Structure formats: C-alpha cells, structure tokens
Length: 170
Image (cartoon, rainbow, N blue to C red):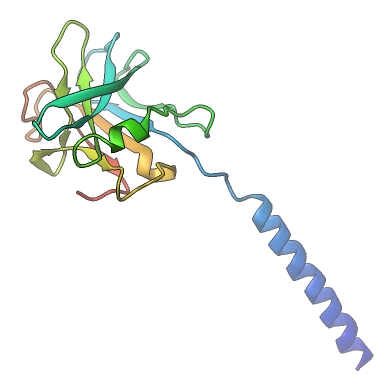
C-alpha cells in the first residue's frame, strides 16, 4: 500500500510538472496584421504598399492607413510575421465605424493606381476583415496572403495581385 501511495505522489508531481512545462511554451497572442507574399513572376518589386480602409454608405473607399512593404523578392516572403510589437496595427476602430465595419485592402505598385486585392477563390469579391464579427485581430485573423502572378485566372483587375486572409472564409 505504501508503494502505491508513493507512486501516486510521484505521478501527481510528474503530471503537474508536465502541465507547467506545457503552459510555459504557449505562444502569446499575435495582435495586428502580417503578410505572406508569394511572388510568382520573374522580377522583384520595390516601393509597394498595402492600403487599408473601409467602404462607406456611398460605396467609396475611405483610406485609413498604409504600410510600405519591403522589397518583394521572387518566391515566398513573410512580412511582419513576429509577435505583437512587430505587426501592423492600423486604426481598426476608425475602420470599424466606416460603412459595414469591414477592413478592405488595396495594393499599390510604385507609380500605379491602387487596386483592391481580389479574393483568390471568388474574383467578384475583395478580401476584407469583418471588424464587427472579429473585434480583435490576432493570430491567423490578421494573416493576409498576397499573390503576385502575371497569368492568373484570379486576377480580375489585371494588376497581377490577388489574395486571401488565412483563417477567415468569405
């Protein structure tokens, strides 16, 4: 009986230690927006930006903020993929109060007109984050995937840009 009591105590200590260890490795929430950019062209791009805003009751896009992207290289590139202090945090509250409270995104090449980023699976829609439904933008809710491709069926505007938001289905 003494053997089982000691074994039980050891088991409880081990399980408690495992629980403490597991909890210590939980990553903190990552608030804000990050980008995953896939450049499928044969050229690099500098001086590009992503513009965020809302669409008002007159169907006009109201710019709230913009983010200047680093040089876009060929292939896959993560931008602002770190934790809370690194991510882009535009004024979500201002956007929330425009129209239906959805944050829309435009992409702009240097010297070109800014166009909405079309949703990869439905070219009739532009990507957005519903700020009424998602009061806080954290983890995958702020993961915007931008694709640059010259020959894509998903590119409605003819500007080579389309994308999606990971974790949010339109």
